[in-house]
Amino acid sequence: MSSASDAASIAHLQSELTALREEIAAARALAQRAEDRGSVENLFNRYMYLHNAFQDEQIIPLWVREGTEGIRARYTNAGQYTTWESVTRYHRGRPTPEGKLILHSTTTPVIEVAGDGRTAKGVWLM
View 1 (cartoon, one colour):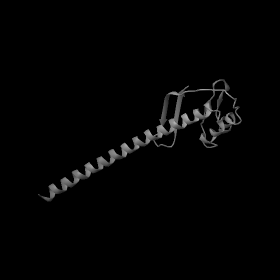
View 2: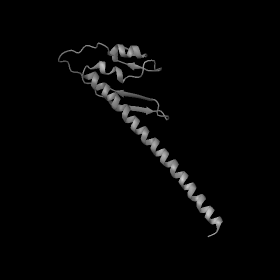
View 3: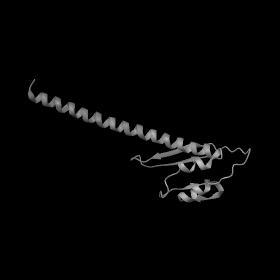
View 4: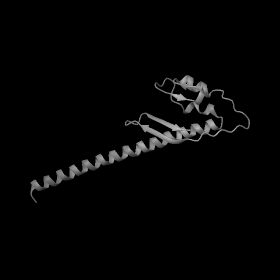
């Protein structure tokens, strides 16, 4: 074998190795986004379980950090809330009526995880 063909073989292998590394990185990123999406869905369903069980004080730590911009929550006839304080105020001191049962089941989640994995947005029908 000549050194030219050896160099060509090495260059070809390096090219394949680079392509495989890129494929692995893309697969890892896709798997992470899928895991993140599942985590968001679990978080929201935990929220709904706690709400159904009248355990709203346990919901507050699930919310975004105080001061987070761009949050929004809507509670049927109670209106739309756009600040951490207004959202958490809704959950503070919520009555826990004896024997009352509510069941808000969630369906059709649309959850979008940002490409950088730092934020996500979701909407559910209930």
